[in-house]
Length: 295
Image (cartoon, rainbow, N blue to C red; front, side, top):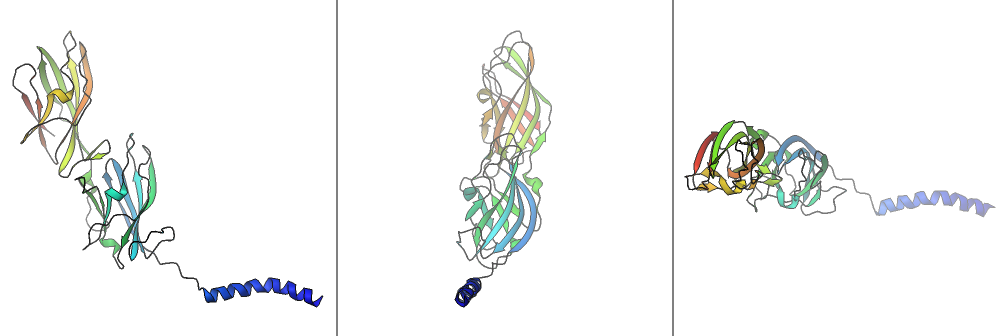
C-alpha cells in the first residue's frame, strides 16, 4: 500500500519537476519587442487606393520565417479597389521601402491582397529587411516599377504629404467640333476630359498622364456616316507631332439622324497639361483640323 501511495504522489509531482528541469536547461527567450509608428496616409497607384496604417520595427515577427536582414520593418496596409474592374499588382516588383542613405528595399514577405475585388478593401502587411536601428518616422513607401519606367508614388511616413498630387481630375470644356467626312458633317461635343495617372489598372510612364476625351456625337444626316474608329482620325497634337490614342470607344459609324452617341479616346501625354490640341485627320483631301481646348 505504501508503495502504491508513493507511485500516485510521484505521478502528480514528477511532471512539475521535469518542466522545471527543462526550463533550466532550455530557458525560454522573451518575444522580440515591437515598435509601432502610426502613419494613416493614403495614395492611389494603378487604380487602387493604398493606405499605410502603421509601420512596425522588430528584430523578427513570430509569423514571418524569412529573415534577410538584421531587423524587419512591417507595414500594415489597407488596399481598396474603388473601380468596377479587376486590378492586380505585384508587390515584389512594385513596392519599395525607402530608407535614408540606402538603396530602395524590396519586400521579403507579403501578406496583402494583390487584387481586391471591385468595390472592396483588404488588409494585410508587407515586410522589408532592414539594418538595426532604423527610424520609422524617416521611412517612405514607394509604389511603382522603376524598371518599367512607371510614374512613381511616394508616401512619406511623416512630414509634408500632399496626396492630391496623385489625384484624378476631370475638366468640363463643353467644346464643339464639326468634322466633315465624305461630304457629311458630324458634330462632336467634347463633354469632359479625365486626367489621371492610371488607366484600367495600368500606371502611366514617368512624366506622363492619361487624358481621356469623352464625346457625344450628333449625326444630323439622313445616312449613316462611317469615319472609322477614333484610332483612325482623332489625334492629340504635341510639339513632337501627332499622337494616336492608346484606347478608343468611339464607334466605327454613326447612324442616320441619331444624336448623342457616346464614345471616348484616351491618350498618354506629358503630365500637367492645362491646354490640349485635338486634331481631326483629313480623310478626303482637306487639311488636318486642330482645336485648342482648355482643360
